[in-house]
Length: 126
Image (cartoon, rainbow, N blue to C red; front, side):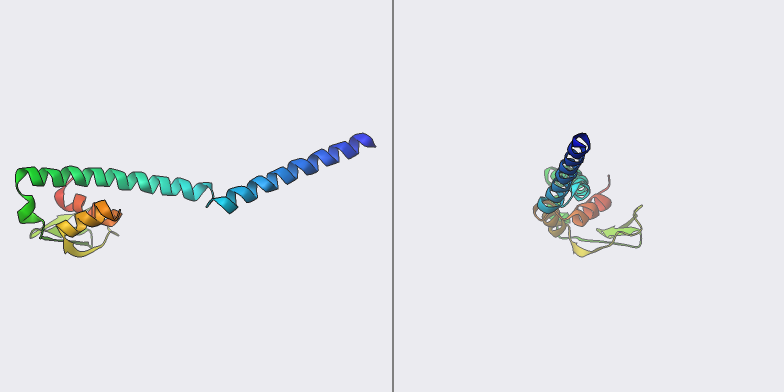
């Protein structure tokens, strides 16, 4: 009888430990899956920001930045328009309201706005 009682107590302690672990994971964090999603989104944003920085730096060193920074950027219906040119894009759901290239750049870099980064990459090319 003592072996069964010891086994039951051990099982209860293991179950209690598992409950405490689960409560800790979901109470002090947002769960493991949302953190992984946020990490993926952050990596995507950083990749776009790096791409944008490279493109804007090229425009600045080539002397084109001042003439292009006030041009309007807008995207909808699988197309992006910039500097009186329309380009087709693969993302049919992407929509970006009209703003200047400079404003889109500032939103991308300083406000971490992924859509602004995407719009710049779409209109300036990959």
